View 1 (cartoon, helix red, strand yellow):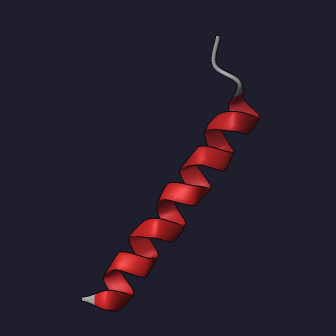
View 2 (cartoon, one colour; view 1 turned 90 degrees about the vertical axis):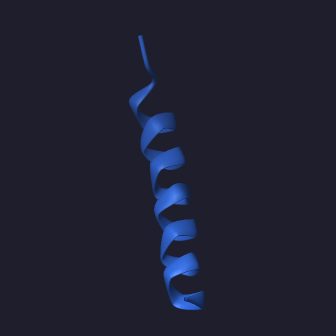
View 3 (spheres, one colour; view 1 turned 90 degrees about the horizontal axis):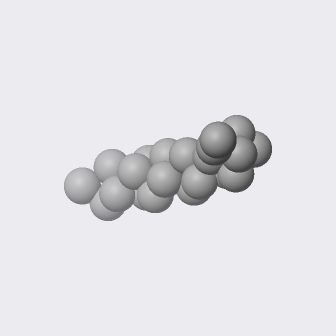
Length: 25
């Protein structure tokens, strides 16, 4: 079973990276 809190943390980190990449474009 997946640990939801870990998953959400990873997801938020990925989202932040995506936002940063979009800002650079």
